[in-house]
Length: 136
Length: 136
Length: 136
Length: 136
Image (cartoon, one colour):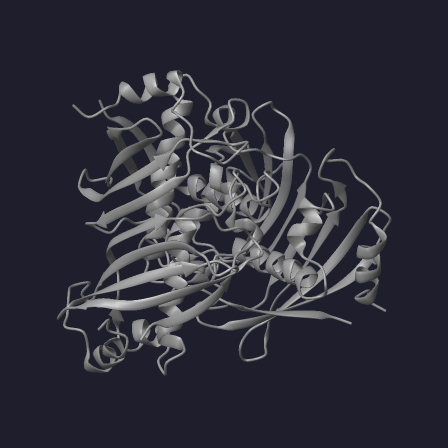
């Protein structure tokens, strides 16, 4: 089951070409990733600072299908396409205000200890959260 | 022959985890892309505003090998791995201050008219520039 | 009567010191400024692109009272403290999630034609909007 | 004696109005502030992480005189106009590529311990650095 987040595209998200500066799409992915925790009973900040578990990206990619413009409220849907012991793959799809697919992408995150910066097995409570959104 | 650009990583490029926020790596790629024009006899701004030729990303990806920290001067090397009629593929490699590979990536850009936002053949002068940096 | 906007502070809004990078507060001011139009019957984008009226900042200032951290939903309240013929002064107050004042600021915007980039009198419909939020 | 830093304005620094998004000017101030340490025998990162001394802004302001456009290399000059026991006032002036004054500003920073986040007297070695650039 996909998790969805809605994000308003801002004036400053555009670049000189008057469309969203493409690195911002990866920022939108990350916003949805934060909301994924925050809106399902966890606080992403506590995950990092209290549980001392971090999720650095090891790979990220995106295809840009359609330009997105400021003022639009986009929908960022995410689903987990692969769940490993110490990593997970998040698939993203951004839909613009008219309901057209604007961008798809994928981010592989490692699960690390914020104390050692080394890979650790995904803790059970987060694994359970991820499994609810595992692609079937 | 690779083109190289040196970029200083800034205090504000880091995120809460005290390493570079990963979407910023795509920004670093774009900075090198701008310098690629600017430092080889073209001005990127004029390419867009005078020649009316734009280069939106249609695909972007990166692998994050090693964290990068603020204060470092990184080297962004780019080479063109594929040169089509209306698109080009730029390969990037970011090296940190110690000379270690921190990030590799690839961005496919389309060549468009800034008036119609439609694909157009890469103009000869830019094709010649790209060919000088085509991977052999 | 103040206009209020709620904004979620993001992971990437923090800097190396693990608090919001201070230039981001001015971005938050601008987000509220955009919402001010969008949520009251105008679209900020149309103001710029259709009405060809822009609002560049000519002066901006802020006092940072309390750090803001990512994950918080802040409230940005704005009120217009001065309404001139061709300019307006917006006063901002940011409240953190606990209801404490985190930042206050002021931005003076000029009203310009997007065609000539010169100052023009504030059009009546926007003047009427501004007057509803004029400090009394 | 003013300290000067040169910064290249980037494609993504512009907003929908095709001029630099005004909060970026405060970022440019901060870049010069970082260079001020880094290029005079200190590393700003070590100041924070090793010396455990931080410099949060408590007040910031700017006047925007002239638009700045991407592709330009701007000069950011800074001078210290006031040096207190636990705070300092940095005055900034940004000059565009044509040598015209584009923006002036002022940022008051507090000197804090990164361990307690409380104000501390400016350590001697930084005070000596600041005094070299104190306005006379």
